[in-house]
Image (cartoon, rainbow, N blue to C red; front, side):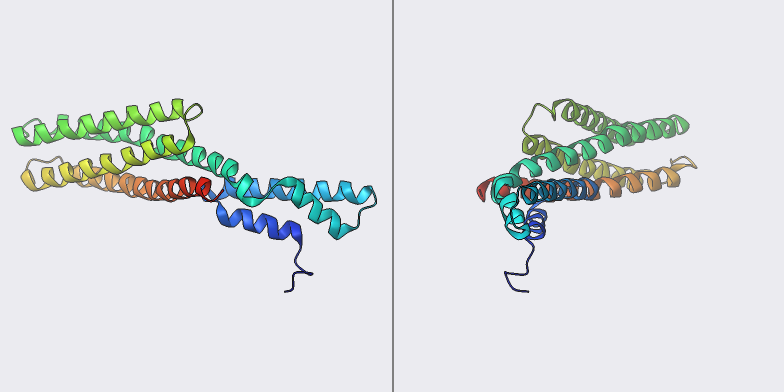
Length: 216
């Protein structure tokens, strides 16, 4: 395809999309909105007598270069990813500690070591949930990259602590568990897998959010 046949609006939106990382649905919505705005601007210029291709090129020029407008779009995507990951932590971690608390009450004869490990896991989940809630409250006022970096750190460290303590409890007390222990481990594994995926996405968004301002 030659330069003469490339549509300026399509090329501009495609270039913008290639620079952005974030929640897929929001990203698609933002790009669709940008395309609609460019189409409307080009149509308005055509109404003043400007040739269609020239109108589309001028609409793109007025819209702004990709490296100038991308940071604004990327910040919005970073804020959205921060909210998603923080919400996942804030909702699932208290649910996990509730499950494990009920299981502990169902197994009153647990060794001291298991009780200590349980408290470590409980404190970790509570702190992670509190930090996630703080991120949700601060995401509108804080720089999106900072909020995303904070929740990525929380979402990385908290599961590591939970996995280590959980495996240690399983090794130390296989004969002291409740009959519901396998289900609890399965539920915990599902939550941790979902969280790891969300944190992985958050990290990729964070990398792109940090990189884009340097490309300006």
